[in-house]
Image (cartoon, rainbow, N blue to C red):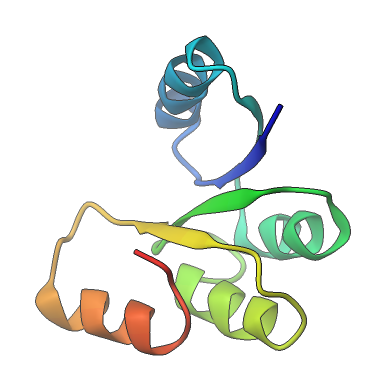
Length: 97
């Protein structure tokens, strides 16, 4: 079973995403701030991370930058803003999509 880490401060969204992924056979874990997300992503045994841009304690771009210094864990960026510049920045610093 593949393990997915969801890093997002919207707990209801995390539950919804987790429900969808669980039905598809994935195991999920959610954390709700950037610092905890980075720690889990580095120390955990995950196959993928879903990472929000706007997070407390450490924003998603900073999490991704620090994660890329230590890991090649695939990362999907998640944002409600949808700004093209945010997409470009995310991809340039190592997001997979």
